[in-house]
Amino acid sequence: MGWFSDLLLPGRLRTGPTVLLPTRPDPKTLLAVAQLADPEAVFDGDDIIAGGSRILAAIELTGPILAKLGIRDEERLWACRITAEGPLPVDFFDKSLAEGIAFRLGGWTLCQGEPTDPAESERRDPVVYLPAAPSPEETIEILREFVSPAESLDADRWPDGELVDGIVRVPLRQGVLTDVYMGADTVVTIEEGRRIPPAARARWPYLTEIVIAKISPLAPSDADEPAGATDDNTTPAPETGDVTGDEAADATPGEASGEAPDETSNEASVETSDETSGEVPGATGDETAREAADESLAEAADDDEAPDDDEAESESPGEQALIVRAVAALALAQRLSGIAADEGGFQLAEPADLLPGRYT
Image 1 (spheres, one colour):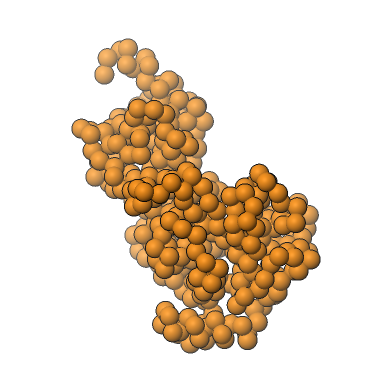
Image 2 (tube, rainbow, N blue to C red):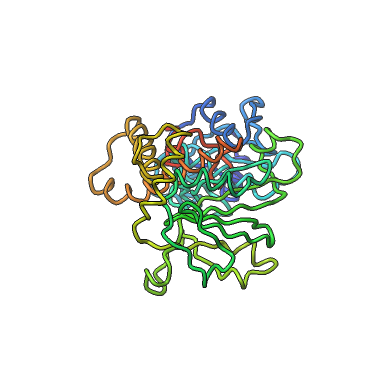
């Protein structure tokens, strides 16, 4: 690398998006990760072309360049810069691509001079891409097996809502949102849009619109939580009567009682679950999802070093809840012929794919 390239390199890396990794990535592993976002990703020499972006071959960064990047605590890193291949990538796909690669390879990203650790991002919830909107009956039949059931319907807050087999459905039909489904601690929004990610376009090249089911944690109701205590990563419940026009695109309903589920409704749900999925009689939908989550976490733990007790104790509840939502997403994708992915558009093959460092 010439002196002029060395002079320009820090600025280009800082502008990014750039993936910074602690070790040199294996090219085949890097391609496999890129193909999660774009199944048509291919090698182009030492580079990789994915979703209209070029992932440049990894280069080694040492003391002088790291110092210019403001990185003081590392002696050596490997950098993969991502550039636009032709026109600028739509919807900042290059940035999402960098974050997804860093998340799975145990690194972080640098974009516009701002370092980011994707493992600490709140945008980790699963989504499901669908070619067409599912019927309410199909959606409720699946969710009741994998989502903790809601006890009751707040008719004052959701005058258009209905409670069916422990799932609250609120038909919106306003803006991009079409339907919202809620259990005791999970909300699923059904949206329609024209922004089709590469993973979905590779499967359905004929589509001009896409349906996206987003599975998110449900914020506690005001009665259950003090004012101002809502977690930023939970979805609050809207006043559906006040949602109009563009507000519907940003407002995601969600609220349910935290009381124990009704045994009568659970029995009806379990009977259906036994016939369709072969679950053990007496297991609720919540138990089914959590058993799958436990298995997924156990498999992930077999591949990684055991964490410290304090670290495992602090991270397990959040990871457990995330895996439960991933189980529901994979079930929706399998039964509705869709694609389960994270919010960055990287496909999920199993629930533990939502955990960081899966390809290290």
